[in-house]
Length: 169
View 1 (cartoon, rainbow, N blue to C red):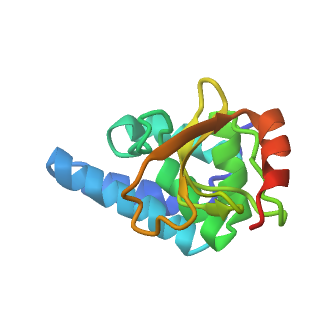
View 2 (cartoon, rainbow, N blue to C red):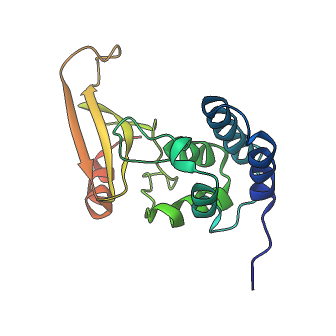
């Protein structure tokens, strides 16, 4: 038995069907914007929506990837976490197999999250879904322009749990 299409899927599919004869660059831009709008508009997603959308609507062309080049659709996860669209978050995590990285204050970590301790300011640059690792770049806490020497970090979930105990916020 086929699951009923979610409101998010219906909205994204409508744009896919309506814009299907546009140029590739225009279609890809429209689809990316439509997905972001569905997430930020807090439309409900079914748990398999990301995989279905990616497969049936050629998501490989418009999902984009993070700055690490490892996380497809990373901006959609960032949007979902920022607006707390739990259905989109869960659908994305199921599609990627990502076990969420949880901050010290109990929130999901996303690309763009910042943390600091007495020594460094950490910036999350993305995830690697093949190795299930989170990537961060760190600068000395007084280097607000981020012009000095940087340090790179990456953690799996178990290592993250240890690391997050060292951060203040």
